[in-house]
Image (cartoon, rainbow, N blue to C red; front, side, top):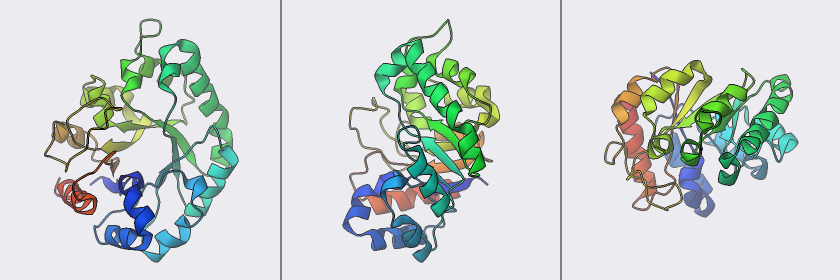
Length: 243
């Protein structure tokens, strides 16, 4: 079975309001690990996770802008993979901007490896909506530039919103994909602010994606959870555990 995780950004408001209660709730859900965000900013994370029996397997952080702080925080947390979670949409509109991202990540591969950490990139929808480069999709062009050590976290929801057949995309990328963000909702554009919903109740065709990735890390995420976030997370974890 896949490793089950959750992107803690899902519960950012709950963590800000009552950190201990939120982490305690997560500790009862049978998750294998969690995926924190902005780890260079939260020095309380290692102690808080340990106190609630949680471990961080992967993380989102600004590797390119705050490399030293991110790698130090990752080591303190025991994180094994850090993903650059964003690159400005306008930079995806031209070859130079895509090369800039690839070069930056490639330039960090040795430092990360020395720290025992893998690094990678997490997509939104705009990477797949960007113009082709030399007759190749912008995202595929980006991947072709990467050091083989750079891994990928496919946000299956945003890839689908970007017009991709996600199982076909995963097949083409193979073992480069180590983690998947799993979410459901109306498949509205990423900047629309549309709420995500409990897995299996939205527009995503999740079954073939999950069937194709039973040996990867499934990271549950809600960009926006507006009904009852803790309960929506619990129901979604149960959906994944029933696969």
